[in-house]
Image (cartoon, rainbow, N blue to C red):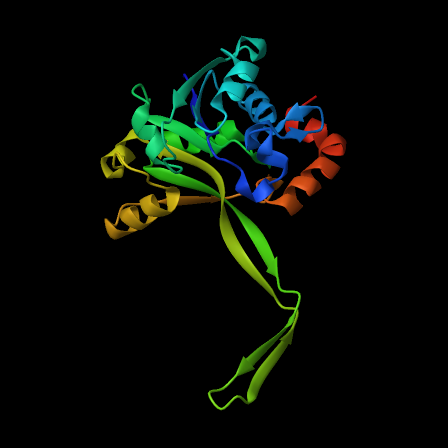
Length: 236
C-alpha cells in the first residue's frame, strides 16, 4: 500500500531567531543532518514512498537540498504557498491526496513509529488522529492565590502542570477538506470546527521521545542528545 506524507515546511521559524535568519527552520542542523532530513529518513524507513513538502519561506533552499528525493529513494515533490496558510489550509493546494495520509511539522524530533500510526488510523477508517505527548509546564516562581480583598488564600512554590499536547503529527482522512476554506486555516481552527460539528477526533498518546525544535530550549536539547540517540532515531 502506498503511504503518503505531507510535511509542513513553510514556516519562518520566528521563535528560533537569530538562527533562522539565514536558514529556514526545517534546515536547522541536528548533528550532521538538517532536522527535515532526519524526518525524511525516518519516513522512508517506515515505508513512506511519497513525500510532499508544503513550502513557502525560503522554499528555494529546501528544494535545492532535497530535489526529487532520489538520494533517499523516495519521491519528493513540493506544494508552493503564495502566502502563509497555517498548518491545514496548505492541504487544499494538493490535488492528489489519497484517502488517508500523514501530516506533520518538518521540525519534529521523535522516535514515533510512523508506520504503526498510519496503519492504525487507516485500518479503522478514522477521520483525524492526533499523536499526543505528555508535557510538564514548570513555573519558576511562588504562585499566590489571593481573594478579592488581597489576602492570601493559598500558596504553591514553583508548581508544575501536566498537559497532553499535540506533537504536530497527524493522520487525516481526505474528508476533512470539506471543512477547510481557501484562506489561512490552522490546526486549531480545524479542531474547533470538528468539535462543533461533533465529528470524531482520535488521540494516540505516545510516551517515547519527542521535541519540537521550534522552541530554543528544545532545539538545544535536541542538539545535545541526538548523537548519543542516533540509532534510536535513524536505526543506524
